[in-house]
Image 1: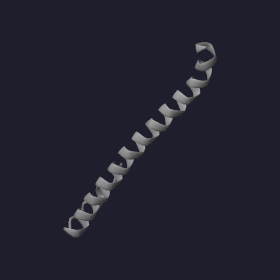
Image 2 (image 1 turned 120 degrees about the horizontal axis):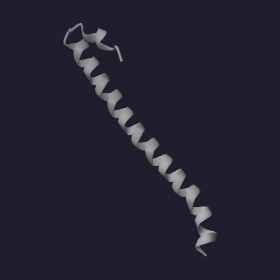
Image 3 (image 1 turned 45 degrees about the vertical axis):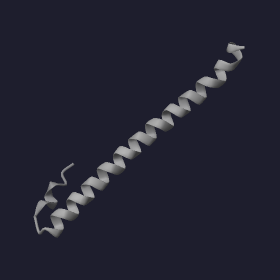
Length: 56
């Protein structure tokens, strides 16, 4: 019975792991973009010339 079940479980586990990694990467990217936008907004509103820091 395990031999019949395992071929169906491996793709599900792989797809679930890929979705989980994509979700984590997306969350980090969203937090990073939000952090950078807040920093840029703070620099622009405070009159600083820190816009040239967008090197990365």
